[in-house]
Image (cartoon, rainbow, N blue to C red; front, top):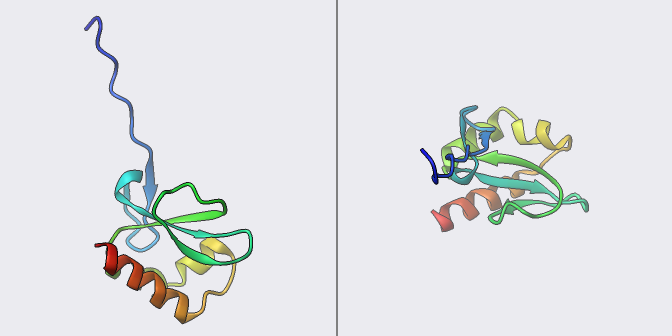
Length: 93
């Protein structure tokens, strides 16, 4: 129709926990900073390597069990970091 803008496609990302493709806005980005720190990135704009998770602690547990974040970031991630990520997911949920 004339005068209407075409609907923009939303970018899709895959959750490393459940392996489902979802709109980027529905997922939370975990980021490994250039200094090697792993944290949740609520803005989606922090510098570093990113991996996406559903805002669900169960997906984070699946990713931890299968070492998917470690594979995505090419480094070992201590259990304390996973605990901090889970607490971050639970406090914002």
